[in-house]
Image (cartoon, rainbow, N blue to C red):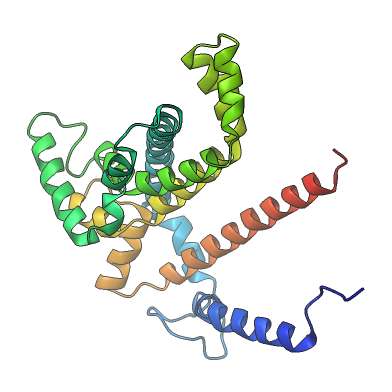
Amino acid sequence: MPSSRPGPVLLIAATAVALFLLMPLIAVVPVSFTPARFLSMPSGTLSLRHYQALIDNPAWGQSILLSLRIGILSSAIATALATMFGLGIWMFQPRFAAVLIGFVLLPLVVPPVVSAMTLYFLMTTLSAFNNWIGYDTWLGVALAHAVMITPFAVVLILVALYQVDRRIDLAARGLGANLATRAFRIIIPNIKFGIATAALLSFVLSWEEIGVTLFITSVNAITLPRLMWMGLRDNIDPAIAAISVLLIVITAVILGFRIFIERRGASEPQ
């Protein structure tokens, strides 16, 4: 029986491609240890001064906590909206379902700068009525991020729903289950992994969002991407390389833990 394992040539080619794609990330690591005050490769001497700067400067910690708060709230809003929309499309199958889906997915095709300008005018208008949600507020940023990331969550939820056998919903309806019971006890448990994936992707997209954030923030709501952008624009702070290395390590640990959980679940007897 022929083996399905890749040959040595394919492994070498795949390794070369992976190294090529990872080179920008790998290059950040030595830069983060430079003793200089600007972004540069270290010349013989390594220093942890820029990692220490992350601890000494409270702005980094504040921006990380703010990005976490915004990411959690915006991903929760986006996932909830996407789940409700997907359930409505899947369960009721309206005549103009394609038009509704296309309308929801509009932020994916509109140029980001157009979306950013539109959200800027929306946030400044909201600021005229209140001070807690609008321009340069963390709730306003979370709302704007939710608008931008909801289409991605909708795509993932719809993909998960269209893999569900519709006969289980028909059987539940035939047995007298009401709409809420069918939705929360029949359908949602069957798409829980799709919902979790949508929430995770929404959080990541909110965490790294910079285009819209630049338009709707000024001095109060400084997220981590905005603070990094300010450092690059103003003084090329090497602390940006240090925080980048930490984010790479955290991402690698999370991905490794996810792979470990998946393999452990696949190896367990059913």
